[in-house]
Image (cartoon, rainbow, N blue to C red; front, side, top):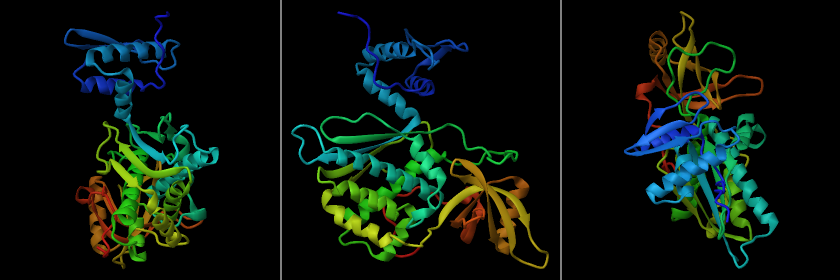
Length: 392
């Protein structure tokens, strides 16, 4: 019998391994460029491979995980999954099979499940930039590109689970047009985290309205739910999974990367098959909607223009939109202009709550603003469930 260790089906990245070791009382002793890192804990030592393109990386990683598994009395796969969670947000889409005698479903239904999950992520990425009830042909390129960045893990036997892994980078987005970067960092979550958070908020709202509520949502409630990312495209994709003859209930679980900051308090969303009719009607009522919901954007004031004879003024700010920093324009009142001047002089970030739009051939701009101020006073952007039925 061969003593060679078989490699695991997936490996965490070196930075995730280092983060996990550091969080479990291991101290890095040495590391030279291109060489394995030596870690120590009490009287134990391990070597962590750091070059993912090395020919023996998989074998060395496998050895590390198996040594740790002996000491911790856990499987190498469980430890590897924990390490992956250090730097990735993961949502697992589980569709229970109605007939699991041979653990199979028609190919058409399997393809529909994967395609619907992709459509949900595209809808969430669109809503992260601009929250619309109906996206239609105005879908953003950055949303389609995000669907190519997230990865699908291996499915599991017994039910049909599609794990979607979204890597959360450690750095904020950089300017995309050649202009110099800001003197201070704008506190903003990476786009990858914001998309997964938007998805969790939106699905939680769908669950609240379609499953937990005593009656179907009104059009006003649907319009308000657009503010947390609900859209025709998202509801239609969820309904499409529930409509498949081979699948019963659907639930989505969320595991959040530990090294990233705050996230929505959403760990699981349950969508039973009997809710498919309500969710389908929610999609139909949102189809063709021209509602654009308010959202909060944080950035830095870039330029101020005001005619001496006018109270209002034009302000340009730089803020994360998608994966890069964009210039946004807005018209502010005299009181808001005072805040903008302070923010520009002191290089302090600001927040804007309003309707962010972009017409054909124009840059991003706010066509209405309900709140503006120094970022330290910004309201929390995370939330769960459906909005209140009455406007705030």
